[in-house]
Amino acid sequence: MVRVYVSIGSNIEPARHVRRALRELRRAFGQLTVSPVYASAAVGFDGDDFLNLVVGLDTVDTPGAMADRLRWIEDTSGRVRGPERYAARTLDLDALTYGDQRVRAGRLMLPRDEITKYAFVLRPLADIAGHELHPELERTYAELWAEFDASNQPLTVVTLDEVDS
Image (tube, rainbow, N blue to C red; front, side):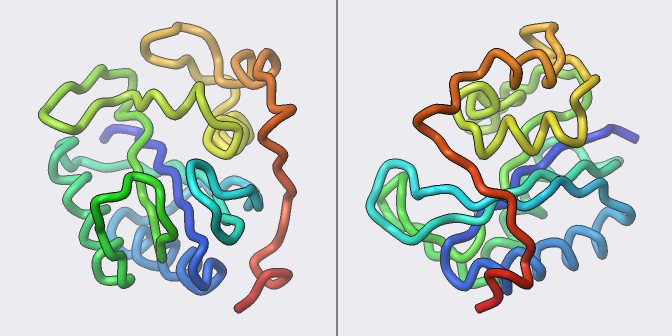
């Protein structure tokens, strides 16, 4: 079994799609460790705020098989993939890590660079895995978060009931 952390994001009917993602991930992988949910502004485009969180799960899937499962959950949640990298979406599921391994397989790059770029990824990851080491930086996620400048990336803790659509 390998411990994997997955980011979840949505800004189209976000409460509904985040709940669905949690159900599907539990169905596929069993017990999850779930971070608080954060609201954050859209990055890279003008759009509605996102709900973001990170879950930890254990899997025997290969990195490629796991990525395929995440993509299937996105697709069955109505995810539309267009040419724009930054756009509104029903659901965005990204594997952030695959144990302590470095994975470079086509477009799959783990650990993901987004961990140290975006507050909406690093903060929830530090919430549930603060003591764990980043596989490449060999620093804990709590240390990385403590040094992160989030002044331009405000986050608000929310519950799904508060933003129910």
